[in-house]
Image (cartoon, rainbow, N blue to C red; front, side, top):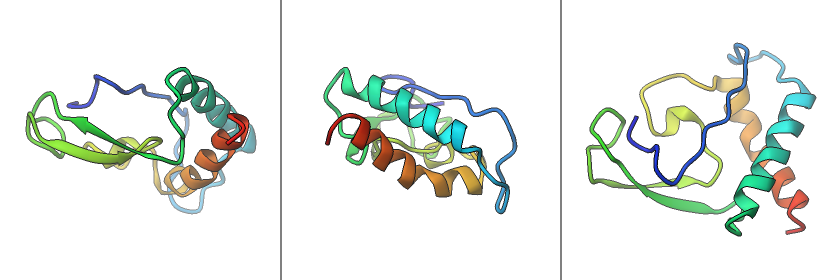
Length: 104
């Protein structure tokens, strides 16, 4: 919904609202996938990236440039609660682990 170019989505099956534990196996798997995928283009998982919205169905109108964390939640760019407060809270640790896996 607006940022399908220059990005990739990772599905985390479950409901991760505030207070719901996110399985370590899931955060480890996401970190490993992030490290590999962003490593292909030498992107630090802890960095910021700038993307341009391709349509007006997101939080940003078509053509608007927006700054995101290289590893962001769906709600950062779109009107949703996805991936849930608990998984959003886990993203800093996922970024850190992905950077470690990249030897950064």
